[in-house]
Image (cartoon, rainbow over all chains, first blue to last red; front, side):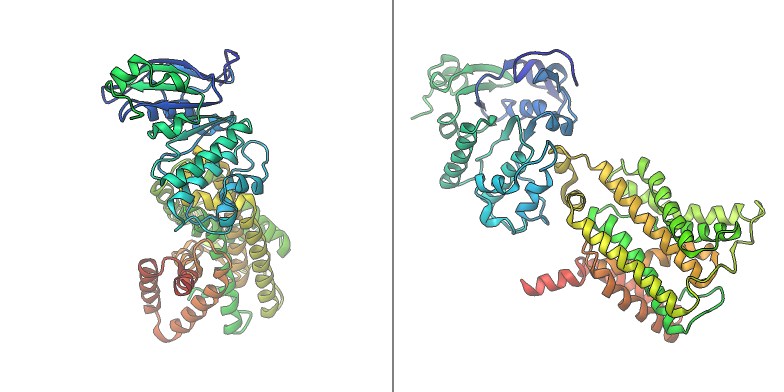
Length: 240
Length: 289
């Protein structure tokens, strides 16, 4: 790592990525500006691939990823995390034999030390702190995923479909938690399919379609954008 | 069972208890590194033999004080463990286990092939010092050492270090994805564990007053793992009860069944792995739930 210094928190430059000859991302360039940014797109748009490249889990075929002025292209993930880029998993990956409290304590020394009780409190996990993860409901496991990430004191939180699979009530609760985190100064990049719930909460949207960046702007302009409506939503107003 | 060579210093039952203590040390060490992390180490007899031969070598070169010998055994086991762990613990899954399996074979071959040609005492060291002047004294030392290991390992298990080891067992990839490098933790756990194994090797040598090729034997792999599984993998404290149960039973069966004891215990290992992988603790949790 190390290298070019810029004022941007996150900058993606000309990123290409292919799998088995299939181009998943093509010349993606973008600078993160908002405090909560949604990365959206239909299935196969390349958003999870882009998130994994940003997190250092994947190396792009071409292009660079800059985080706080440091080149973090290609990871390894633990090094990206130590620089402050922390990602949650789309498929929850709890440690089945650890208690909820231990999940937080496990990562509490990666970047300085954090207050375990505070993380459990803001994620609503306090009542479950002594329960082992094995057997806990999916909604709680999603919160554990968030708590693990917060334990690292992220500079930028990368959330891969944080409300996927949750009931509308659970999703609302988790979005409230994210909203509180945002108000507290945590910056985040969210990949999410549930557009309306997500757009109500973010202040910047990046949209991909078939590996191309088709929109970058504030959420209130998202549905008005002709490219989004014609190409991404097939011309249908998604709010209907 | 294994109390074969050397001059017997204490009644058979006392010796059986000392032997149980030696196996409990091995099981505690194995359970700490392998039971907690899930990295199965089959190299236990190698580090055990290393400790036994270190005792013999030092005794032949004028070091006779038991504390010094035990400290040296710990250092040899720790150093040997470190040398093996540094390159091999970068491997994951069966590759590490496979390499660890080769270690006891290497130890045996080295002794058989090079010991006598190098002019060293015939296939081992005889007339080593007793651990203590009396059998009861030896038993107290073994018990004290196991108390020390148990306290140390249980304390470590509850620290952040132990938490990381348990995290490795559950999902090492997720651990690293969240910023924790597992490698240094695994290396330290493995080295410490083999330091304890080295001491157990020295204790065994000073109980039988002999350090020979049998110290690299298969029994020093089978019984510790059996004890650790029976006590509940990663539970550590379960090794104490399981150790006495397994070793005293095997000593008794050895008297009445002879060589069939090993077949019986191999069968028991198979049954345990298939039907009771969580050991007594797992059974208790299942009953309680």
